[in-house]
Structures are given as C-alpha cells and as structure tokens.
Length: 276
Image 1: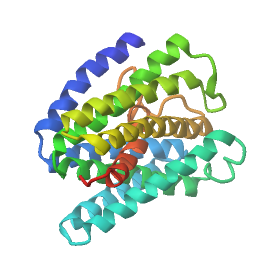
Image 2: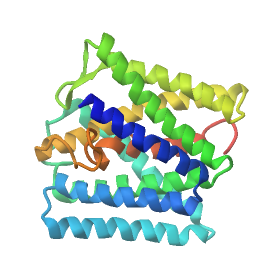
Image 3: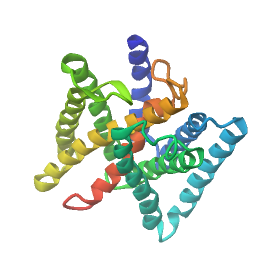
Image 4: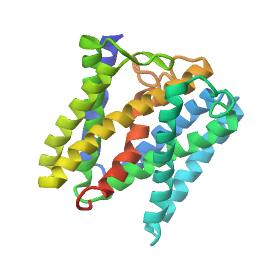
C-alpha cells in the first residue's frame, strides 16, 4: 500500500507543479473544477444518494462554479468570492465542534441528507474560487504552489511524527490512527516551510512572521478537513470516498485537507500586514 501511495504521488505531484507554474489561470480553474465535480459525485455517495441524486448534485456544483466564473469579470467579483470563501471558513470552524463530540447528535443534524448536501455545495465550490484567486493574484503561480506545498508539508510532517513518536490519540472516535504528536509535527513542518516560502515570495519582517503563523493555521485546519471528511465517511459506512488515486482513494480522500485549507489560506492573506 505504501509503495502504491508513493508511486501515485511521484506521478501526480510533478504534473501538478508544472501545471501551476505554466498553465493559465483559466486552465487551472478548469482542472480544479473537474476535480471538484468528481468530488461532488463522491459526496453524493457519502449522502447515500442514488445515481439520479448524485447526478443532480454534481450538476448543481457545476452550475455554481460556472456562475461564479461568469461573474468574475464584474465589478462585484470580490464580494462574490468573499461570500463563498467566508461561508466555507465558517463551516470548517463549526466542524471543529463536531470533531470533538462525534458521533453524538451527528445523525440528527449534519448527518441529515439535506444539511449534508448544503455543506457539500459550500465546501466543493469554495476551493475553486480560492484556487482561482490565488493563481491570478500577484506572484500567482508561486503563491499557489507555496500553498499546496504547505499542505503537503503539514501532511508529511504529521505522518512521520505520528509514525515515530505518536502516542496520544487526537480524535479516536473519528480517526483512530491520528495522534496529537502527529498534528504537532505537521504544525511545525508547515511553519518551517511557510518561513522558507515567505522568503521565496520576498516577504520580510512582520509579513514573514505572520505568514509563518498562517502556515501553522493551514496545518491545523488541514487536519480539520481530513477529520471532517472522515466523519462523513464513518456515518456513510465507507472507508474511501472513491478509487481515482491508487493507494490514496478518491478526490475527497486526497484533497480533504485542501478543501478546508484553501479558503482559510485566502482569508489569511487578507489579514497579513500588507495585501497580496
């Protein structure tokens, strides 16, 4: 299993890096939108929808992504982005509460099909808006690449810290394999990489320090994304959301951290000492 995961990563990561560096923003948006549509199909499975329901959910996500892309040339583009990104940020904060008390009350609230579908629409559309915003901003390709490497650094740091010194369970009712030590390892790795990334982006002083703390928050909220998707999978009684990536599962399995981190990374950039 580990070798399959490594082989998949070696095949996908270089393509992703080249794409972020050299593709135009429209192409990046299209690629990520397609991934989110695949994620919508998987989300329908988490909601136990029949094929017709999954098709309708996927089409709704496609329509929302299209509408947001359509109005990007209008003067109220920022307000549109802020609404969907802000809604996603709010949900991921709420998810922290559910992680601490799962499964108590889950089936009657978030586990309901109608509530779960609304959450799915938010968490699948917002990352497309966030990725588009990052790539079209100043230093866009490098900034987007820094974001993804932050998430990867957090994931890698958490994996190795958890394997080597992990003892105390982080959220045993949701994901028995995750440890507090692993989460701390991911946090430290993300902060260190954020410092290097800030230097490459030309940040200094207060902006560099703030960017490091943003990297730490990306690590924390990445874990929230991972655990939140795990809650939905546990409620649905499935192990993996899909089989798109051999050894990694589906889109939601592989991009669960990105779903949570992308909106918060964009929000965090607005709070740095100077704007992006």
